[in-house]
Amino acid sequence: MYQVLARTWRPQRFDGLVGQDHVARTLTNAIRGNRLAHAYIFAGQRGTGKTTVARILAKCLNCATGPTVEPCGTCDACREIAESRSLDVMEIDAASRTGVADTRELLEIVAYAPVRDRYKVLIIDEAHMLSKASFNALLKTLEEPPPRVVFVLATTELQKIIPTIQSRCQLFEFRRVAVAEVVAHLRRVADAESLRISEIALQRVAHAGEGSIRDSLSVLERVIAFCGKEVEDDDVIRALGSVRGKVLVDFFTGLAARDAAAMLSVLDDIVDEGHDLVHFWAELIAALRDLLLLDALPQRRDLVSRPVDEVGAIHEAASGLGRDDLLRAFQLVADLEPGLRGSSRPRFLFEAALIRLAALGAVRPIEEIVASLGLEIRPELDRMGPPSGKPPALRPELPQKKKTADARSGSAAELIATLQTLKPIVGAMLAEASSVTLDGRALEIELPQHLDALAKQLGRPEHTELLAREGGRLCGADLVEVRIKIGTATEPPLPSGRPISEHPPTRPAARPAAPRAASNPVRPSAGEALSPELLETARREPGVRELIEAFGAQVVDVRPLPAVPTVDERTNEEEKP
Image 1 (tube, helix red, strand yellow):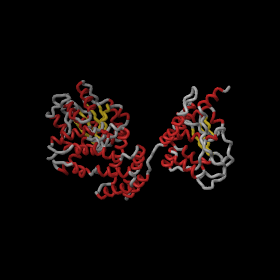
Image 2 (tube, rainbow, N blue to C red; image 1 turned 90 degrees about the vertical axis):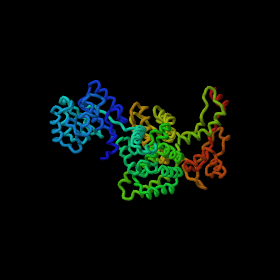
Image 3 (cartoon, rainbow, N blue to C red; image 1 turned 180 degrees about the vertical axis):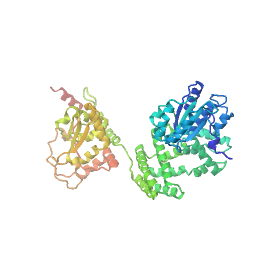
Image 4 (cartoon, helix red, strand yellow; image 1 turned 30 degrees about the vertical axis):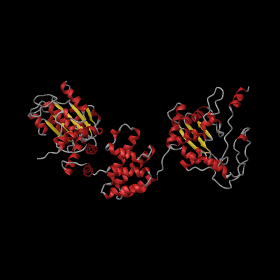
């Protein structure tokens, strides 16, 4: 009778294990040094060799030439263990024998000496399925077991094994087998089975196995049943129901171009080909994960979930997407899963998500834009030269709002300075406050009434978390409570806050100009509209143009910068008594 590959290629000795070298080495040394434990827990995902290792251990202990790390495989004990008919090696499925009565019956059996072999080995598969009463029944026996008895508890959910059981056993955690190791093992199997298959096809099979040797061999069995002994790459894709790499390339080309029609066309093709949309979702989010990994770790192509050449083509198609774009797309696609699995119209949900993806604009950090604006004026300042004994200023000092005294003293002022360095955008928002009060328990920020939108931005979780942490650091505490409130409107909004109008409202009387203000561009007097020429000149300034393009900003007012003293004037000012 035909035997499937997963059983045919089941390892019979420790040297045949794939990907579990740490387990094989430890047990081999324990047998050679006669330091065998009486109870073990083998934990790990399905198909990684837990029960296989338990059988190999039983062979090593009961082989006619043993105890040995190289069981012969031909004696009665070895053959009976391999065929699951040994009287002294019992395999119990805990999923079907969860009750305490079943456990007590087993304990009565193991209380007797082995029938023929050296050791009585009890293998409890899916041990996490035992009831709490069954675990309690095991406790005393595991602590003081009968002589010549070895317990092996195999589980895929270690967290469900109660701590008192874990403390009485030696724990071995079976890891997921790396794709490269799975591919190498599949190649050995394919060669032995006279199977012609490419490395790319084997990689697809290994990825479908998800780190499980048994699952990978089962997938290969399915491919052979579909293709025969001559396996073509496209046949593997059809056999596994995988999404072709070109489909994902077309999808990410459309995503990079923000082309909703292109992405919806890809979805149409997926549906027409008969793919399940949940399966396509899994392929899509795996591709997004691969792109994020390549962005963060460009040298670790071994971590990707698809063949390297396919990932390279997808990465090139998505070259117009930054890390923030990929993160937003990943989050939106990840949020789609529950709806897809539970909806009677999953296609509608997918289409809406793709349209939303196309509507997401490109992301550019505001710090980067602000930094680029600073570079526009820095060369002009550098040419003025530093004053005597002082480093050059990076940019002219802008006029600041008048703040209450508490913002100018002690830790509050230090907090503002710290944030302007640590997170410029938060520091800039905090500098707009009319009052900043910091004591040992709370940070209170009051903003003018016309800056309520700024208060909402400052109240975002990432900003309040930063304020609480830095405020606490300055006060010697872990965190402080952050309170943001809007003050009473005691003065009209700043000119920068009013909308554009051909006939702007009358401004308050202008303040007297500074002594050197005459050398700067002249601002229109109160009640006088800005000239179109002045507005156009401001819009053409490189930094302003970049803000307009990036944020859709508008020029609503033009003000002169304060005069910057020359080197001689600053020197004379410092020499005054």
